[in-house]
Amino acid sequence: MKQFQNTTALVTGASRGLGVNISLTLAEQGCNIIAVSRNEEGLQSTCKKITSKGVSATYYPIDLSNTVSVREGIEKILSENQSIDFLINNAGIENYQKFHHYDPNTIDAILATNLRAPMEIARLLLPNMLNRGGHIVNIASLAGKKGISYNSIYSASKAGLIMWSDALRQELSNTKVGVSVICPGYISDSGMFADAGIDAPKLLGTSPPQKVANAVVKSIIGNVPEIIVNNGPIKPLLSIGQLSPKLSDKIVKFFGVPALNLARVKLENTDKPGR
Ligand SMILES: NC(=O)c1ccc[n+]([C@@H]2O[C@H](COP(=O)([O-])OP(=O)(O)OC[C@H]3O[C@@H](n4cnc5c(N)ncnc54)[C@H](OP(=O)(O)O)[C@@H]3O)[C@@H](O)[C@H]2O)c1
Picture 1 (cartoon, rainbow, N blue to C red):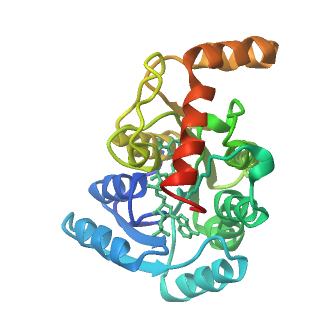
Picture 2 (cartoon, protein in one colour):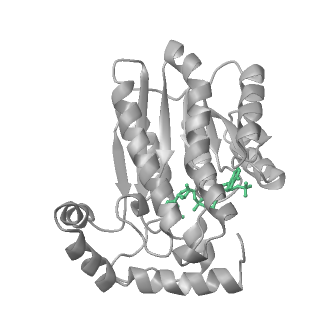
């Protein structure tokens, strides 16, 4: 069991959305925070909230879609900070499109931000973590457990994150470093789904962002391999998906997920081109 007093967590995607909840919840446990994302104003605002909890907060603006920036940024963080106990790979982007309409640059950006960056940051932090002990938490999605039409690149990136977490956890099982993956469904109030301003399918519902932050803490304390954060029980559907993908396609369609996503393609192409 790991404790948080006088520890330090590097949280990516800490400028807005779920990363703020995660950072503040860790701070409430006594954890100092190193906040990473691109938007300096957002990072400053998060750090101000964190320091009001009585722990320290520093921020580093890094573009995680750029491999060179990731390496240089993390090397700077390592040279300026004594130790990092926890890595929370939370930053992520999505883009709703028909697959053949994807711009290759968008595909690269999603894969680099959601999958390549978490791997690279962990690769750079692990040598120190292996000596001192630590924990890596990857924020994936239920979209990585069952393919999501019209958001297929995001789905692929999150499936990759889940499988990489699974493999790395086994690889590090005899070390002092734990690995967890969190798979949220639709999250209300803040974050990318709430920002879209669309209602979740009634049968699936939403969960509050605090549940994701609590799952991060729980995963570290209990060294839990995977936590699903969803409004209702979803594991039976995921199990059906393993036994019969066609049946689970029908259930997902009945829930209204493809219809919702098609609406988001329209939204993406009118309100938020090339996000
Ligand atoms: N919200 C949901 O319903 C939901 C459901 C399932 C999974 N998730 C996952 O939860 C995580 C957090 O999502 P969210 O809902 O909080 O999304 P969000 O509100 O859109 O926030 C995304 C965060 O990632 C950062 N980010 C994006 N691109 C970046 C880049 N190139 N370099 C550095 N930072 C970057 C953003 O900061 P800057 O723009 O300042 O760089 C921001 O802090 C993501 O991995 C997402 O896939 C969310």
